[in-house]
Picture 1 (cartoon, helix red, strand yellow):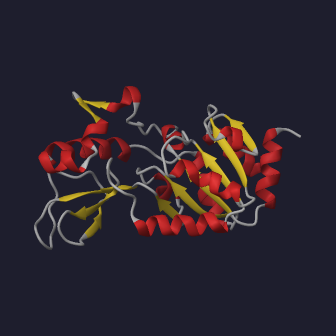
Picture 2 (picture 1 turned 135 degrees about the vertical axis):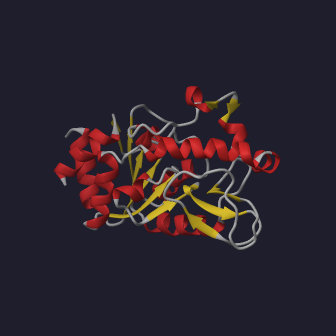
Length: 240
């Protein structure tokens, strides 16, 4: 039996399938990863801009960077992998989708049961009060809160910040229910997301991995499918 058929059989036999996606699935939609060669903007390193300290010192600079990112992402469209996952949710195959991406492409493709580990670049939150909102187009200047007039910031998790406890609670509920997890385009290096598949495995579940290269998770995967998610997922869909 080939790997593709084995993966399809595991998906067909799954009682509670969840998915974890990383930057790889979005890269196929031309979303820059902001690591490596994509990590420089003007002369600034992306890793230095995505911090509470940077925003506190120069909110104008940080918002310029996020507006630039939003403009890039606004031109990107979901690829066949995003659409396949959205269809699997609609037909009941997929129970929930956990993503490390902040680009909003899963929702754009029609997925609704999405848990965003690191937030959403299109959502805003107040730095002083509890105000939240969502934008549909790139920000201009420094957005301010209509309630208290403080600066708004992107509602994403920056370096040095903890993941929201409510989000983590939702994720662990899904991990406990899951008997199969499909891991797509994640480096399996960033914690805590890198440990999510292993938690499913530890309770007797199965791991399916789709990636263009092997990762630290590959050794634990029941099936590793090497290639682009935008090509592999539609092939899997045909076998289901």
